Image 1 (spheres, helix red, strand yellow):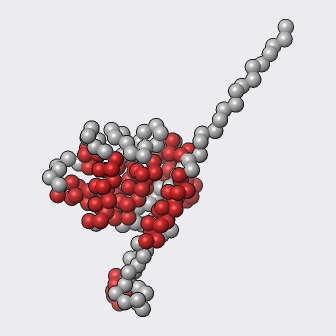
Image 2 (cartoon, rainbow, N blue to C red):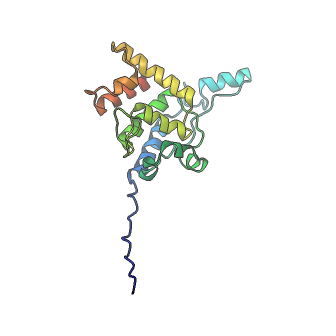
Length: 192
């Protein structure tokens, strides 16, 4: 008696997200637009750097190269994968950013990955505000201190609008829209 083996149907690889390259370009453009400004065109150092130099202290760290956010394949995997050194190195590594830069990049993550409510991350990779912040921290773009400063800024904007809820609760309100969330984040970034 002959045994016939059924041929396995070939599995298709998950679609690679083409917007990841655009996201990288957007982040680079954002960071490049935040050029150093000085009082006079012949002055090449910022006031903070000049003061630090005069006092003999270490100057403030400047922004590093723009991070590359993970594409669709990594978005679908659990967030703890973003902590792997090989992933962190390719997609940002350890970079110090200000609270304002962190908020702008948080908005960029939400724009590129999509916005979520009621969860930090959906199965398709969409993120709420906290989830977008977590992506940046896990990639080494900023740290918990940066997130805390950004959170305070978000709360200050909400408080000024008469809202006492946390920004995470505010994000999850049933009537909330993605455009309102992005507006809140960008307003907080400008106020930083």
